[in-house]
Amino acid sequence: MSEDKLIEGVLSGKRRALARLISLIEDEDSSVSRILAKLYRHTGKAHIIGVTGPPGSGKSTLVTRLTTELRSRGLTIGIICVDPSSPFTGGALLGDRIRMQEHALDKEVFVRSMGTRGHLGGLARSTSDAVRAVDAAGKDIVLVETVGAGQSEVEVVEIAHTVLVTDVPGSGDDIQAIKAGIMEIADIFVVNKADLPGADKKVTEINAMLDIAPTSDKWRPPVMKTNGRTGEGISELVDEIQEHMAYLKSSGVLEHKGLQRSKDELEQIMEYKLTRELMTKLQGTPEFDQAIKRIARRDVDPYTIAERLITKFLASCRE
Amino acid sequence: MSSSKKIRVLVAKPGLDGHDRGAKVVARALRDAGMEVIYTGLRQTPEMIVEAAIQEDVDVIGMSILSGAHMALFPKVMELLKAEDADDILVVGGGIIPEDDITELKKCGINEIFGPGTPLEDIVKYIRENVNA
Ligand code: B12
Ligand SMILES: Nc1nc2c(ncn2[C@@H]2O[C@H](COP(=O)(O)OP(=O)(O)O)[C@@H](O)[C@H]2O)c(=O)[nH]1
Ligand SMILES: [Mg+2]
Image (cartoon, rainbow over all chains, first blue to last red; front, side):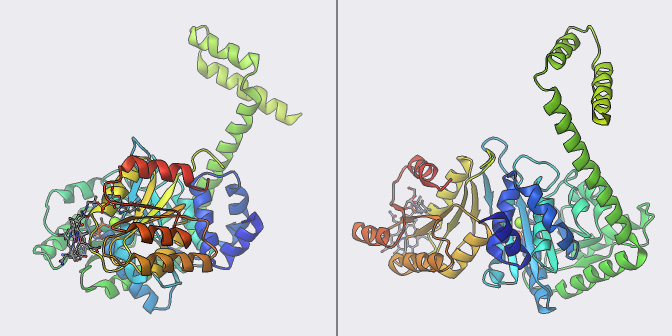
């Protein structure tokens, strides 16, 4: 598929083109930045919803249930499910699709599984760009399921507008885990498996924690109860999700976050490009090799050398 | 193609057959060989298999059938793949499949069939050597 055809395909919502683009993104193909550059102005329309929480708490089941409800409200859906890759072999068993069979033949639902490929933080390195591709393909909602998250897997907050944190009744200990890291990123708490004993107790516990949590936000995360098996509570959950988006818009938080994200992204790209420019100039030059040897011998320190090389590089740019 | 290209495989159980041990064993072996394996579970229709293969942009489809329904289900998958212009995907199968049927299935485009007792290394090796890089 040629680049232009691929772009045209993605923009007209062709699932084959979208699927291929996500593979290129995952494989870090050299064409990706060119393609994403052309797609950029067609993005920013989707409501991105992150779903995170301990493994087995019902994330995939909830994603399926949410999809059913959102479809019934006339919205189109993209789903990205992230599972861990083995750090030893690089292989991965991606099984979230098992729970998503209900939508297997719905052309307005696009499901993609990703391995983390060594990236920590609960997502794959390329998840953010994959979400952008789905957004460009015109899906109204993008659901992102993280690898079962512990405390440090909070990256989803950087790409999602609304973060759902799932938990289940019982297991008093994991409320501690939640408290430590994930607590802060939740826009909505979901106590799933409400059919099991202790659901109300769990809701009360989370609410109690929220009452003492310091917050500057006007949004207080609601604590919802769902049953993934029957779909009970899902419609109310979708109401809250849409409520949260309305809040983001009316409070100006959406705009603020958009600016913040654009800044972060621009910085990241410039840092990457600058470093690459600089290194292609320096790599293999006698001056660079000599400096490395002198640093290793403790003749000079790396701070001074870095300063000197960068100053020289910037001066050469001015010429 | 860049060096980080990974082989992606869809492992599927078509039809009503509940024998999933072989499919799971093969899925794990492929994962351990460094591939990304998408497992979709039991009771897949040919339409579901082809749709998943396209969305996941897999290089390989692996189907497992021990129920005897392979002559109906495998060719149907091939037909749908052709209709989607996606028959460049490598298609392999396994399970209880008589010799004569294997010949027939290969004629309709299934690349290889692996029967009971096939060493897992053979399957890994075949996929590595035959996937369209
Ligand atoms: C274990 C077993 C069961 C277990 C299944 C457990 C499970 N969750 O898998 C149970 C007890 C549930 C069961 C039930 C039945 N079974 Co049974 N079962 C077997 C048995 C003894 C072994 C199958 C097995 O797990 N082998 C181990 C795995 C690792 O081997 P494998 O699947 O063959 O996989 C290897 C290769 O085939 C290949 N491969 C397989 N899949 C794939 C996929 C890919 C992508 C690739 C590349 C390779 C590949 O690689 C693997 C490694 O070498 C076979 C007999 C036999 N010797 O095969 C009968 C057998 C398959 N069963 C049979 C029957 C009839 C049934 C029942 C209908 C019995 C009944 N009347 O109730 C039910 C139906 C269940 C259902 N819902 O479909 C018949 C099928 C006859 C046919 N096809 O004509 C068999 C052949 C027994 C017989 N000789 O009659 N069964
Ligand atoms: N009892 C009960 N089980 C559920 C509920 N929701 C999901 N499950 C089951 O919990 C298990 C894990 O679900 P899954 O969605 O795969 O969790 P994930 O690992 O967080 O994606 C599956 O066996 C589901 O069927 C629920 O509301 N009640
Ligand atoms: Mg899951």
